[in-house]
Amino acid sequence: MIKEKKAMERNQLEEIVKPLTEWYRKNSRSLPWRKDRNPYRVWVSEIMLQQTRVETVIPYFERFMKRFPDVASLAESDDEELFKLWEGLGYYSRAANLKKAARTICARHQGKFPETYEEIIGLPGIGPYTSGAISSIAFEQSRAAVDGNVLRVMTRLTENGQDITDAGFRSQVTKQLEQIYPPQGKGDFTQSLMELGAVICVPNGEPRCGECPLAFFCRAYHNGTQLRYPVKKKKAPRKVEQKTVLILRVQDIEDRIAIRKRDAGGVLAGMWELPNLNGILNEQEVLQWLSDKHITVKAMSGEIDQKKQMKHIFTHIEWHMAYWIVDCDAVGEGNGLTWVTAWQLENEIALPTAFKKVYKKIP
Image (cartoon, rainbow, N blue to C red):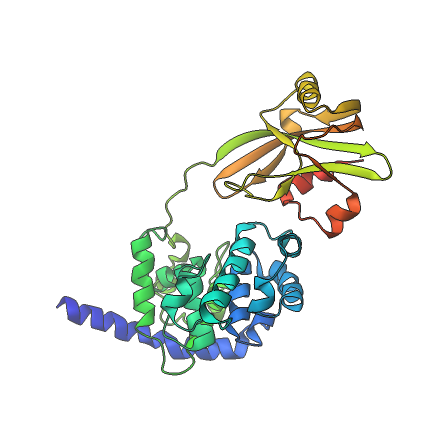
């Protein structure tokens, strides 16, 4: 009886394949990574699109492809140039893993992108979703790419109230979809599910059910329960960390700003940053720190009022940032600081968005 029920569910779900694929072929957005299903292009686009809007990604993708058109050029890239091209996309570990994976492809696969799901998922920074996307879109394999968009579509279609953050449920949906992949057009089917979740079965506000090619099948639509799905367990509150960020500048031959490298582990690992201290420090505390670094102060001003602090949100933590702008007479040596020009910050050095927010406070 259980086997019969599963078979019936599979047969029912197969009804979505043809109308959804046909809708996609007629209505899909024209996006640069869809023009050529080269696995390298598919891979880079999927990594860029993680937690980032399509409109934001398009110019980044085009610049990236122009500078690094293939695996070999990415593997040989300079870290500073790579991060500069990535600046503004955030989650810099994605860029670092792209390079690591490119180097792995060159070392293990002679620069040719691997074709099997198992080989692809073994690359740095690639999980089940990205491996499924590449396998189906670039290599026409029956591999599903299940993300938040696809889970939203599937839970509404079936009125499934399981928690979409549960890995077991995601795996279950993946297996269900992989059983109904068509003999041809596997990449189109994968992208049709993505597209439906992005433009019709949307996450915020009312879904556009009147334009949905699967309305005939959707249980939530027929029962008016669309907004009850998906069910998602509430996240634990983000940890709040207070920071005092220092904009240290010196006038000599040219105006220069102090930056330093972050540690190799943790948030923004290995990135450049403005010097910063834990907690909200007053003027005297900052002056003491500067004295310990053998930095002589000419003048300083800042903002430490709690109501005026800047905020920056990461996945699991939230920074509340006060700042001080410090004009320095002498910059000291051996204090871990690197002094750079505004031109270098604009053109050569990637400064994470959290610190860019503070940097823009310079009058």
